Image (cartoon, rainbow, N blue to C red; front, side):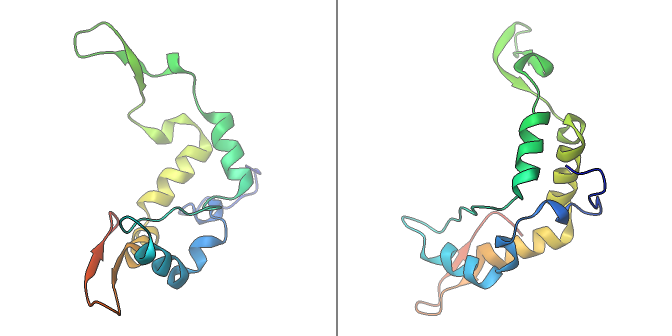
Length: 122
């Protein structure tokens, strides 16, 4: 990430697609076999590259299982501590504006059936 990038609530990481909520809501409703959404370009390319660069190796996380032995997965509980871009992404995911936008996209009423499709944001 450029050092002069805004670090308010993380909106600087976003690509353009989230700026079209009506189109995304239509894609969500029309998805098969159930309402879901894949947002290509959700993050800017430079933000995606920075996340890959900051992503830690397996050994950096907690690799101990419930029995106290080395396990097959690595856990990092505080995403914001993984690096500055992860910290910004963490703020973005917690921002009220982000949750509201995703909620509007993923909780919609079908105009043809009157049925409600609920997603995970809200």
